[in-house]
Image (tube, rainbow, N blue to C red):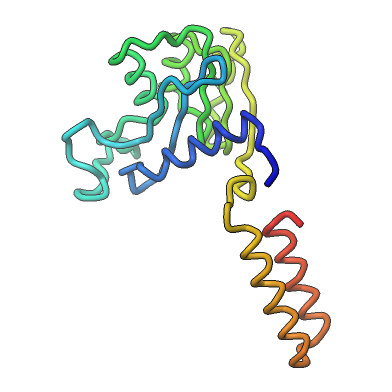
Length: 187
């Protein structure tokens, strides 16, 4: 198996955290890192012990769910709660931070924001990041790098395609499926 980069590792952590999200509108995960060490993680969800969107629905005001705390804010608050210094750290996020989270990230002293997906990228947030000297990096998540069953899946699909060929399936159809398998698994 190929060794993944630090960026891929931390981005994978964000996506794993996002699976814990209790918001039904968008699952987001965030990881704060200093010196290649995770110091905090967060996902978007309700306050500890509060009602969750998955149980009670989103509480939407002005087209925004106010029941949830964003992943970035949860990670920042975790640092505050447990006394982990943030100044000079980096944050990895599954989606581009909203304006409010962007301001909190800057104010906390984060120096680098790494995000996997563009999501309503706010022009003012981008301007604020530039003014504060915060580096922005778009790092798409490559799920194939952390798919531990990839080889078995490729082998199964190859066997199916071979069997289809033996049964007389049209070559053009098989070629189309083969391309899709290669695209899906980065072969």
